[in-house]
Length: 119
Image (cartoon, rainbow, N blue to C red; front, side, top):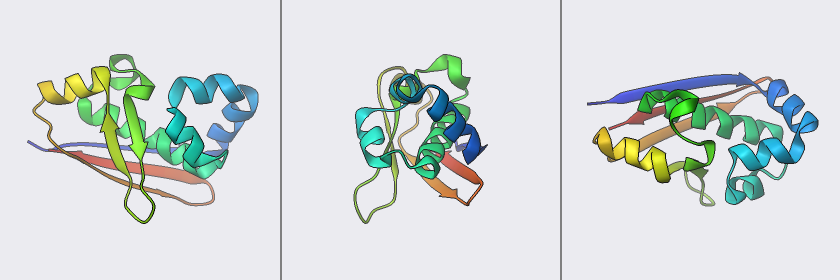
């Protein structure tokens, strides 16, 4: 069975929350590795936020089902980004029989979008 999730977000919304609650927002939603990768770049932060939302939709959990940090967007230099699951997110994926999650992310000047396909 294939499960899909998609999310789009306005980058300025992420920028606004980062300015209003800089440390609180970042520490709640992103792993240390994600924070290090983004280095305060709002399009990258927004793309990772959209990725986490898309995964939650594919898992059918919404934001109540799994903590933000249990879904991690990981990227090695020169390679496509990947989804790493931890804790509750990993458990939910195992319950659903998910072995792999493909991720596609993009951003423009105003929007960031992410699509996932889980199989």
